[in-house]
Image (cartoon, rainbow over all chains, first blue to last red; front, side, top):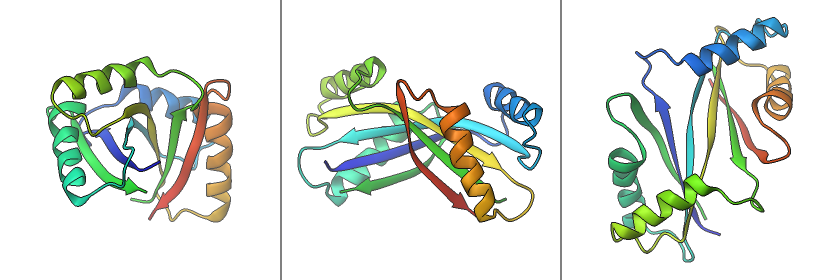
Length: 82
Length: 82
C-alpha cells in the first residue's frame, strides 16, 4: 500500500524528558555507548493509489501545520513508500 | 552526530485510535485522498563515535526488547545516520 511517512522530532534546543529517561535506563542496563536518546513521532499517511509529487508537497504542509507543533517540534523527514 | 534511528509502529492488526482521529480530522479538512493514518514512534539513539555493525545489531535488540512492546508494536526499521 502506498504511504507517505512523516517524521516529527522535538527541536534540538529543547529538553526531551522522556528521551532522557530512556537514556538513563539504557545506561543502567550497561549501554554507555549511547550518549543521548530523543523520542519523536512517525506518522504514516496511507493512500489507495500511487503517491504523486503533489501528495508529497501536501503531506509536507500537513506535517508542518497539523501533525506537528512548530513551537516545539520539527518535521525532519517526509518520504514516500510505494 | 552519528545516530541510530529506531522506528516503532502499532501492529497492523490493531486499531490505532489516535491515528483514526487524525484521519477523521484530515477528512474534515478535505484530505479525502488519505485513506488511513497510523501513528508510531521514532527514537534516535545518539553516539559520540561512528556507529558500528555491532551497535546496529544491539540497537535492533534494544528496539525489540526495550523501546517497543512486542504484544502491540513492531520495530519497522533500524537505520544508521552517520
